[in-house]
Length: 185
Image 1 (spheres, rainbow, N blue to C red):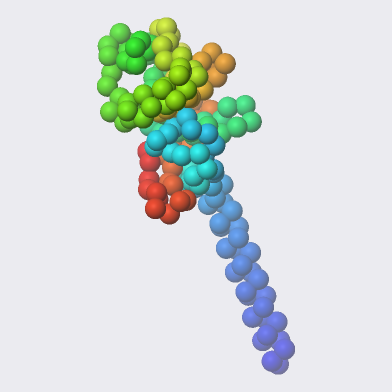
Image 2 (image 1 turned 180 degrees about the horizontal axis):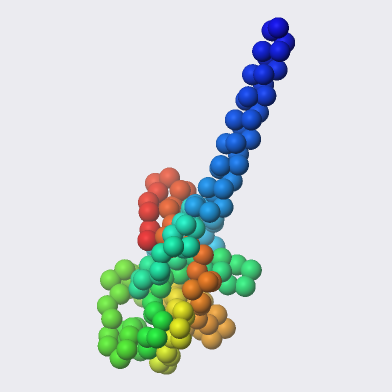
């Protein structure tokens, strides 16, 4: 009789473990997915090597808004960028000023001192700071990194603009290093 109770306990434990594993897998696939930040295109907001959880559910249900931090699929990589221009908008950059539909737009999240330090260290921009006017199409978004002198993004024709379906997450939570833990959206 004791053997039977022991077997039932083991089977109940295995069933609970299997259910927990399934639920965790579904959660990590459809709600929050782990990712490591690669590169410095979003510095100083995000640093190379930081570990984050990306909000996949937000990417599926939330329409991206200007200045949202999103994760986008580019070829076989995932990039973290900021939404700059929305569908049907005209966008350009001249002398570090963003223009949307011909009007200058303030970017209060940018650390201009940090960008100046990067420019001086590189002695130039790796990627151009200026961009001629482009008009976004239906469901098309222009994305850029906060570290503009060092970010491959939609300003460069090699990366191009992104479709809504390319945006897989909206917002992220830094989990490592622990002293940087916070939500970014």
